[in-house]
Length: 98
Length: 371
Image: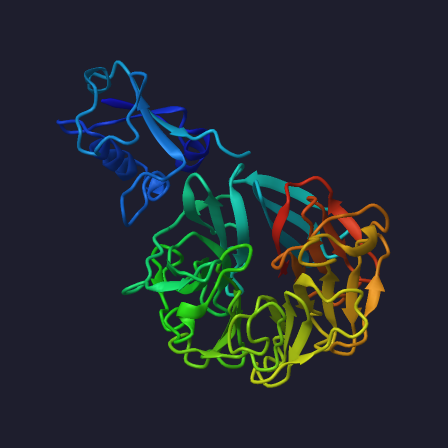
């Protein structure tokens, strides 16, 4: 299972806690994780990726294993510790504005 | 005894305020969707427990919420607002062509007789409709693709469709207003549209009497007389008696005719309310005094309503969707401010009380009169 940490506003929207777990077929990629997340929690559709372009929303970032993966290709495999469930995949709201 | 329910959208969440028909004691429930911008929420006239809310955020985009129990619980609905066909371009602030792009829902207007049908006015300006309670949204593209569309330019708040008025006497008729394009009317349920801006005069655009380009801030009508519309334009308070075919100014003795909101008394079609704002560069009330102005003559002659409102050191704004009237025998009038106060009058504006004083900045106020 892949561990995903959500920003506070999305936890409220999805009705979940800080961290959720989703099952993702290998190879585990950012696209696969986000697809699984949106399938499990449809309220999140469009809030992380634009619904038509599937691009990351500009003020969100994706981190894992102390690396910023935000600008990686969506089909690049995620680091092994994330795939093994040892490290979470973090969706972070940029610290901009109030 | 009747009850009233206020639906208040703010910069950081939604609040539901309820009272009995005396409107003296209020219960405040919220924040719903804490931390999110709630541009507007509104109840269905066909089923008052059916509410729709526009929830948005610069970080997370648009969410559309629905309640079927009067705001106690909510469920996220569809949030896919896709322009139909080639979106094309409108004019940007510098005059260059700019691709049409969805940003948020500014206003939700539930159908008068079908709780599952609801219209959404969005930025960049377009009209959408859902017929399944908000799950799926389809654009009514005739408005955005009006021949004047490529010349529409955004106001300071964006190119937003902020006003949708439905006509109880004619289900085919819809009025909309777009900042800063102007007012539009459809007589075929939103399929085709005509501009209804004749008589508007706006300094600051190349042709002050142009067909489009006017920064209309808000339209209001009385349900019994839908051919009479009142308009708060960027500057000027206006009136039409022929469903928008021609407008004339009714600013009269107002201290300033800049403002955002305008509304009509529930039982007196000639009684109109505005909140004058100092100017387009000073978005606060003039002279530090919060004054609602009421005309009982359909415009031109205005009286200041001040009892219970701060008359010293007050510098708040009242936005376009932030005033509403209930339909109790003694008409209630409500408005919210950029300072987070929501004021109520149970006597048609003669006197006011603050229901709450310290909410986040208020974007919108709607009221439901319940049995």
